[in-house]
Length: 242
Image 1 (cartoon, rainbow, N blue to C red):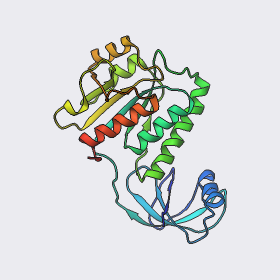
Image 2 (cartoon, rainbow, N blue to C red):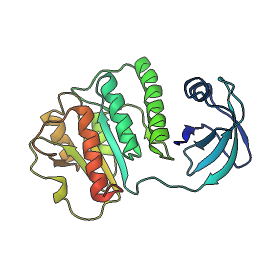
Image 3 (cartoon, rainbow, N blue to C red):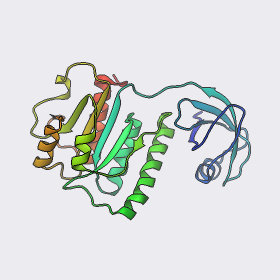
Image 4 (tube, rainbow, N blue to C red):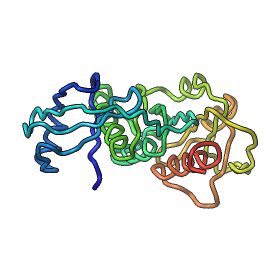
């Protein structure tokens, strides 16, 4: 039987009794209909995870007993930063979810010529939503570390300040394929465009900033497909999917 994993925003230690957040409590009791004695797994993003047992059925503040620490590391050794130009609504949500499942460590939402416009008040709402999507993806996928999601950054700043051993940008005019890139890589940044892709000027700017233009096959990928496809490919070449 699959054991439910729950992210806890706070300290965890063996022997402690922990009250879960209202959202986690509601999901556990109302949706999953868990009963006292149900085994759980908790993690707080600080490494490893904790075995726990449900003590009560309070759907607003369920209480669990932490029973043991498990020093488990399911993180990829490849440090991936995703620079994702902001796409519309659920497409951005999908990208963040899949990037998290695939092991990205940092996500940088970027404004570009064709990206969806987000004002300050909308970003506050979306940033909270994006953070929760990442947490849920970690709970589902077994990750013990939640990726960092930065504030929205303009294109010029994003491409010139991101520092990785290898920096890639999808470019439909490129002739270089991922498999042609040689050597061991420990850190990688990937720039992915919004609906409509990056402009020619943006691609030139990225190349000037040290990004290598790459081509992923002969087909045109949607924005919510492009980033996960590239992440899976680089994780196969240099990460933990190979």
